[in-house]
Image (cartoon, rainbow, N blue to C red; front, side, top):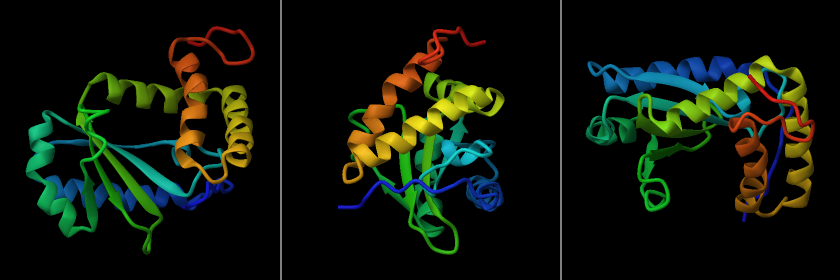
Length: 176
């Protein structure tokens, strides 16, 4: 069983994402896709698990499925077991090597999954108070659920849902 480890923000994370983005775009050529850095490593100053969350937007999931062999050739493992819970996503993992571990979430461009992940990221990037509250929550939950990543992730969900619904967790303010 692995533990929940939260690391201080690293200025190298955006640089790693730039390399990951280039390799993914290369694998999908000539298809047009959009590749975004999401998750806590995409928010300057935010502590995070040292895992790059990458969001890939394609026109259709069938386009993603057609590129599974190309992604596997780059070291990404296709993980289908979560599709029962999230049928709108194709999920890939690239184990840590010269880069941190990568979690690739492939969805249809403009889908609710796409929009919510980008909105949450952008709110954290533009609202330092919100990012600070989220950082404190993550650090507390990492201690409480040190041996259970699923519980850690589930415990963050109410905060994330409150933010996405326009509420500012713990302050009562309304977000833009």
